[in-house]
Each structure stands twice: as C-alpha cells, then as structure tokens.
Length: 333
Image 1 (cartoon, helix red, strand yellow):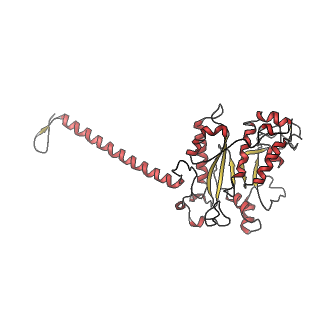
Image 2 (image 1 turned 120 degrees about the vertical axis):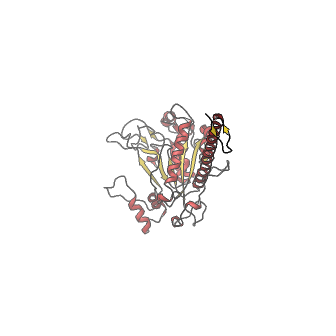
C-alpha cells in the first residue's frame, strides 16, 4: 500500500505505523503527566487538611487555621496552651500493650489506627461540615513491651508516650489478685497503662479509646457538660442532651463531671451487675485520681468467684472477662 505525503512523494506503511506509535507515546506521556499533577494536588490537599508535622521527631498533630471557621472558635475555657482565643483541643488516646501476636497483626494495627484517626478528624472542627467546635490531638500510650512497633503509630500522626506498667505484680498486697492478675484478658497487669490517660495534663479532656473504635458524630455535648459551668444556660443545655444509663429514673449529675464511663452489657449475667467498658472513657486529667487508682491496685482487694459479692472491693463486678483489670477496676473508685 502506498500513500502520498505533503510534498507529493510517497511514504511506506512502516512510516505510517511509526507515526501512529509516536502519537500513542505522546498521548501516554500527557496522561502520566496529568496523573502526576493530580497526585501532587491531592497530596497537598491532604497535607493541608491534616497538618501533620514533617519533622520525624514531632509526630503531633497541629491545628490548621485555614480549616477552622472563625465562628467555630471556643473561648469558654482555656486550651492546653493557656490561650483562650484558640479552640479547645481534646486528646484522643489509645493504648498499645503488645505488638503482633496470634490475635493481631501489623497491617491490622495500621488499618485500625488510620480509620480511628480519620473518624476523629471527620467529627472535629477540622471538618467544617461536622459542626463541632473542638480540635483534637492523637496520642498512643505505649507499653515498653510494644515500643518496637510504636513507630508505626508515630508515622500516622500519633504522639507516642512510652510507659511501663504503673503497678508491678509484685507490689500487689492482695494474695488472690497478685497470683491471678497475669491470667486476665488480654494483658494482665500491663493493661493498667490505660490509666496514664489521667496524666495527659496538656488537655482539659482526654478520650481514652480502643483502637478498633470509629466515631460517627461529634461529642460536643459531652465535652460542653464537662467544661461549661453547670449553672449556666449553655451548661444546662449540654447536660440535658447527655444520655443517662437510666433515663426513666430520677438522676442528678455532679456539678463537676470528672468522667463518663459505659457499661459492658455484652458480658452481664442476668441479675448481676454489668462491668465497665474500659475501651471508652471520657475523663478530665487528674493526678490525684491516677494515684488513687494505683493505691487501690496495690492494695489488691479483689474477691474471687462468681457470687454477688465478688470483684473489686466485693462490689459484685467480678467474674467476667477483664474484671481483674480495667473492666472491673472503676467500680471501686
């Protein structure tokens, strides 16, 4: 087959095929450049949204003023830096007690930590559509046994706090607890590192949460009820919105709400008391409460068995998974 070129000459089919191949390569190059530019824009957008420090020594999450509408600023109480003109920053803390084992994996740790952090971000003031007025900062309370894999959380923007168990088993005076707490699910006395949430004093509120949680709406009402004066119109309105365990019974809230806890009804035996869900506690940092917890653990007043008078202080919160550790401990304080 012969075709005519512009000069009136002829070109072979091979030359035409070469020209077609060149057009394909040019098209591919344009597509790749376009994809590269889109990727750069997406990276820039995500960096601006989350504002994660590029300094590997500082994995804390910083506030992005561009993403915070002026009408969302809270000035009812001071933030962690003492500046009343900046939004209040709530600490969200997880506990990492051990690295991968038969129950968990590195990929699972990364996935869960990423989903949790994204859900916190989406329900904070950094997402204007959430309607929240509270900022956040992510923490990981890491047991020394898990320090080797904690960098994975640091890379995801969690501020790492490495701690040993606040109470060693040998310090426990109660005979039964000292001999059996190491068998408790999941981590024995090591689970008490969760109590270090009470020592994160740079924030007015700390939400201790399990890593497999995901938040779907802001908790501003809970935070407002803790921080606003109980007798103010705003404080009263916030308290009216807090869901109580027994809404049909006459209940009163303390003037100074120190913590919110939830029950673990999945384990409760009919007619018995439900233990606590240690995976979700909203609290005000308090060194005195932290020290009180440690002394209770050291005393080790835990009644064994499945009677109505078992568990910590014989108050009937024993006999369930985690009752010798954080699932039952809050009952005694």
